[in-house]
Image (cartoon, rainbow, N blue to C red):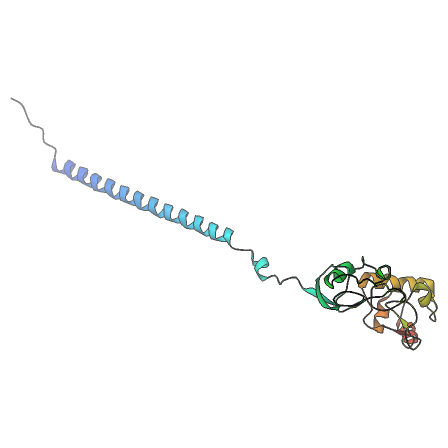
Length: 205
C-alpha cells in the first residue's frame, strides 16, 4: 500500500512567500536597469550638445577692429580706406588703386605699418621726398619742425635735444606710428616737463 506524503501547511505558505519575493526582486532589478540606461542616455546627449556649442569666450569675443587711413597724392583712387590692423603703406596704396604714372615711388616707405587716422601722401616726381606719413621732410610752414617727418639733423638742431634725444624721438615714432600731439614728446625717454615746455612752440604734428 503506497502512502501519499503531503507537505505541511506551513511549508506551502513559505514557498509561496519565496515565490512572491523573487518576483518583486526581479521587478526591482528591471526597474533599476531601466533607470540606469535612461541616465546614461541623458549624460551622452548632454555631452553631444556641449561639444556642438561654441566656447563662451569665442561667442562673446568682439570682431577685430580695423583702422582708417586717408590716401592722397599720386594714386589712382585717393580717398579714405579701411585697413586691417598690421597692414602697411603698401596695402594702403594698393587699396587706392596703386601709383599713378607720375608718382615718386621712392618717396614712400611701403614697408612702414600704418596707424589709425593718418594721412598717406604719395608725392609726384620732382616733389620733396616723403616717408609715407603725409608731409615732406624739412621745417614746416612757419618755421616749426614737424615731429612726424623731421630728420635726425632737424631734431638735433632743436634747443637741448642733441643727437641722443633725436634718435629717441625717431625710435618712438617708428614704434608708435605718429605723434598725435606735441604732448606725446613727454613719452620719449629723456624729455621731461621742463624740456617739453621749451620745445612746445618750436614743433608741430
